[in-house]
Amino acid sequence: MSAPTRVAPAGAAKPSVKSDEGPSPIEKVLQVRSLGILAALIVLIVVTTMQNSNFLSSQSIRDILLAASIVGVLVVGQTVVMITKNIDLSVGSVLGLSAFAAGSVMKGADGAPIVVGILAGIAVGAICGLANALLVRFGGVPALVVTLGTMYIFRGIAYLWAGGEQITADEMPSNFLTLGTATLFGVPVLVVVAVVAVVLAGVYLRRYRSGRDLYAIGSNGHAAELAGIAVGKRILLAFVFSGAMAGIAGVMFAARFGTVDAAAGSGYELNVIAAAVVGGVAVVGGVGTVWGAALGALLLTTINSSLPVLQINQFWQQAIVGALILIAIAADRLLAVRAAQQLRKRSAHVD
Image 1 (cartoon, rainbow, N blue to C red):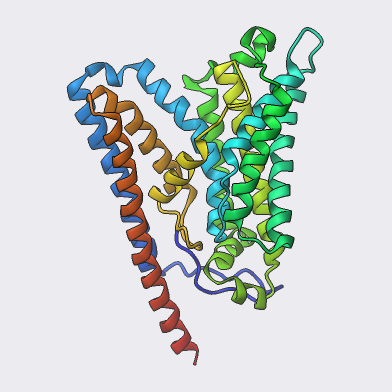
Image 2: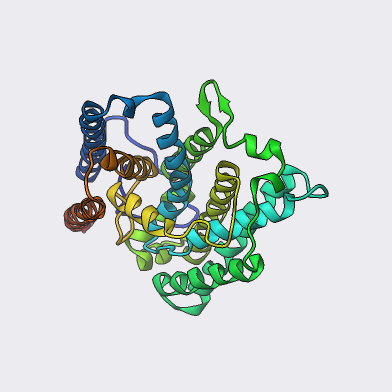
């Protein structure tokens, strides 16, 4: 899927899609890019398995998928925000705060029911996202600066709340911890949650007009506003959605690891942004899919698991991730040039 390069007037009917229209050049590039990520993932798995056959053991696959599931949920929210030409650096801190909130609500013999704890984690995430949205929308400050500040604020709140304490597994309900190990038809429940989030977000961005509006906003916010799109409202909802997804990831984190402290989720924000960029989400907005971003999350998680098996130094692990990001940014530049060419052609056609 590509970023739309035109915006529809407010109230206009959803344009029909001609069945004989083939994929645009940008769509072709994104498809090739996704296939490239998939090919790199397969090659990495094959090479690592040749070095150590246990890499493809059921336990190893399960660990990789569980690790990728938390990043995958975070990357869904981050993708929606980045498509609107913004960024959310606070997702790691929101994850930690949400995880601690969920654990605090449920811990102890007189703790609240599991459902209440889960909803509390999601609500805390959504509130953090709303705070980001309001600061970006009405503060007139770039999202990079706002979320950099809130990243530290949310982390500070978590430290203040925890007071140096941590919530351990024996304080949380056993049924809640079971979610971290339970399976559905052989697939870990946390992985199912991530897949559902990716599918729903992918369908929304591709099939619904409000989802397509996000691409229009990221491509040209001024033109989108002139076309009648509620730019401010869409961006506000994008940040709230990202915060809610970070809240869900926080609940998943608490269920998987059982122990939560104020440092939970530290460093996740960079992994999430790296996964989104590697997966084809343009830092300049308007381009990208949650499918590609999810693949990026799976690739980076697999890299982190496979390079130690290949006995590659930690330095090179970071260097490889950095190289992937640079390659992805170069590809973004290519897409931006192609999008500009398409805009000029369509403008000339209209004239």
